[in-house]
Length: 156
Image (cartoon, helix red, strand yellow):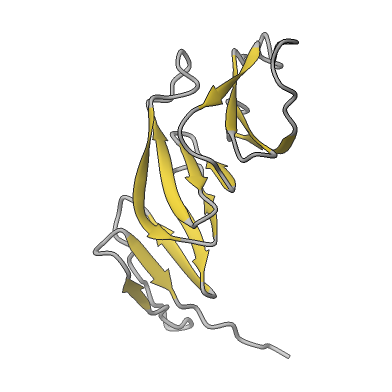
């Protein structure tokens, strides 16, 4: 940020599994990405405002940045590269969550109404061994999300 810009109060910081890029959310829910973060320049060069959507939370995988809006809508940022750390656009994905988290490999997990959901590019398959119970699942949006209805057991 330069001296002629308005003072920005950063609230949350997110770092990808590779140590870059670095993303932040400010007090007004604006999203920024740090440009120029490299091995030989770990602090990067400058903050870039990512336009269009206010964010409640972000999640970063190896391949994408995921945004959760205050209304629970979920978006994925496309076009992110080393030369374009800001990316090109946000695309909304089906579903509405209270919280999200993502694995390094882009499996998106979400919580909504005390249920746990997973969104991935492959179908979730249940396996059952003789010593385990099968976890029931149900789809909430065709094959986009699976609801993992795992029961908690009390071993006391």
